[in-house]
Length: 338
Image 1 (cartoon, rainbow, N blue to C red):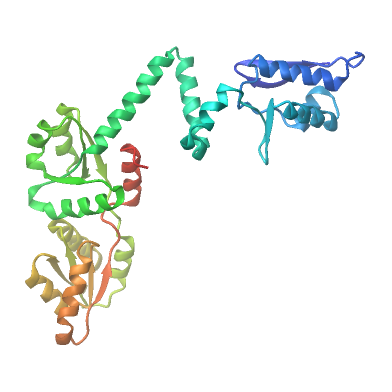
Image 2 (image 1 turned 90 degrees about the vertical axis):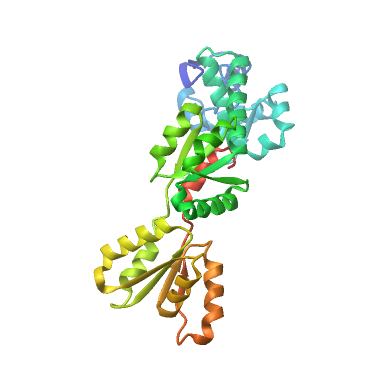
């Protein structure tokens, strides 16, 4: 019989089983699969048809196919992966380099992805030396970019920038420099490579400055404050709400959004955490205070210091990070940090 199996490397491996031959059907199938492996029609890592599929293809009993696969595995030509299937086993140097690398053993799926990417580049006519140059160039560029991360915001709102810097340093585990947008061009003149991070409010200005210097700018999305806004909608009418932050712009935008939600129903008091007078006024009058994570310790300390003079201390709510978690993940990936 003349049957086809699965496709590999652009070829269809065909099985020719002669039922009247002196050579047993199982030996014929074994020889043909073995040839497909050693001739690279079935390359290392190739998944063989299941016993059921191969039984249908060849007309042989599944037990016969299972014995053939067992014989191939005993010869070290294939390996069985529980719940996945039978795969062609890498031989000699094909597996030696991988086994000597703890990184590849720790990330087997990543290793397969790298191999697939290299195979695709080679198929496009790129030489192995050129592939190496491409990979090393990209890696080197990302390492150099991650070595210097700059956060830029207008000098009128350095508080927002400081908030971003503190969150990024904690999340990325690397130093981050705050640069006023007005000074960004001068700073970039003095660096060979860097990554500029900013919020989407000023992404246009940052790109105009960075693009001529071949420096990439990555915008980050801010946290949506959905939980805080839900809480604000439930506050009793005529309540006093305090907003405390490092950033003046966050306070301004927050106040406008709250007004659009509640109108004159709420009295909103804002204070930058560095303004001790406004902060203490908010603590004395507000029923609820919402602050960013960086400001939280100082606000809490101020409430404790004033508690003897308070009839009822305000409820203090610490919001999530200013930068959204998806943006942190994207930034880590772009910088090669995660």
